[in-house]
Image (cartoon, rainbow, N blue to C red; front, side):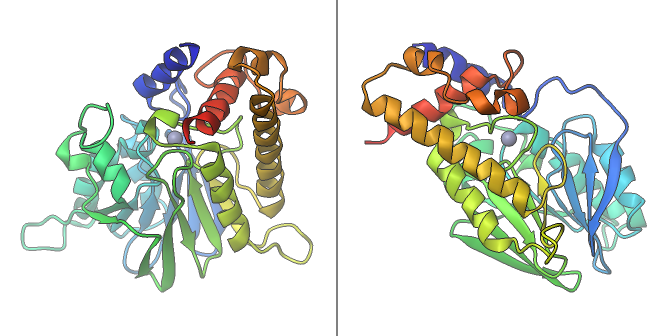
Length: 312
Ligand SMILES: [Zn+2]
């Protein structure tokens, strides 16, 4: 029953990181055509070019104008697309305002004087956002993605480069996408990789530890380091600082080690309380752990445990 209580808290909040104070946004050039905006909820990745910016995730409620102002410093074109990496509020709450305001930045491009940016996402995100699946209240229709995909990948060609939107099944949630800007050599990882703490596995919304490990392996399959082992393919996490292959590798290994320990303890018949007491995360606690706040170390261990025992 402990499990139910704490996982319900995740369901209510629905954020990757709760309670972040308002702060000035930071804009960094990742490389080539891709930038990242930090401080408006989840990180927002921005690809620029002659067809207009494509952004990955739309930030928290109340930060939409700040995000649009930040994008406007990178491009004077209307935002033409928004890709949602997953359904959590701090990645999608700007959908409606940013998509419908998009055309006004340049006075609009259609007869109506308005052009809405297209919102792309995996179909499972739409099913949860619309309330068709799960226990969440339906979000306003204006937030819903208008262009969804239901298989492994959706491919776009925008601003002179191929963009691959890749579904990573049952990882952070069941509707995750990672976005690979192929020519710029940048991945926007969204929910499946954040380097601010232990990974959030939203079990009530379909997340699993094995899916998350698979998602990190998908990222590792794509990234190629430069000969010095620094730079090469760059990864913009859902939260936290820009990363390279080494960072993702270290994080994946941590998750595999914790998963294997918890599985071994389950196999020995230990209860969740006993597994927590055995502290399977101990050598990572100083870097990623937390005893307080939205996602504690105990929450993480519980989610790993829950996702390992839920499937026969
Ligand atoms: Zn999230």
